[in-house]
Length: 181
Image (cartoon, rainbow, N blue to C red; front, side):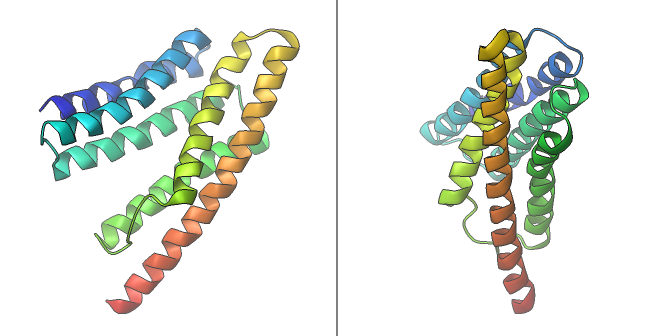
């Protein structure tokens, strides 16, 4: 299936992304990998639907690819010393939420309702934008780089706050589902 090949390819991009971020590689190359993987995330689903290749396996590897992209970018930025302290904590909130929600979905398959509401969509956009800004900021000089970095920190904080909101929403749905079982 072409769509699954696209998903697997974009997932494999997370390894060089992590290496570039963690070990001080070219920020522009890291940004290209990050944006490329994000763009391919939109493409693989459209290809799957257009070619009638949708499957449970495809949906699963798509989610794994999404989670690995966030994990590689955030942990790479932390390992490379680009983000520290409270900003690193905000990034880790994104990762921990993914682990908790994945666990809840495993425990309660199909019972947590719609996965992507409006708050979730805004959170995803904010997380993606903030990570992109934080990746490229070190490559920019002076006030421009500092301003981009500060914007990335602020947007990551917003994404982390929205992530906590979506985590509470998922947890509340899970509690209702547990009571019904």
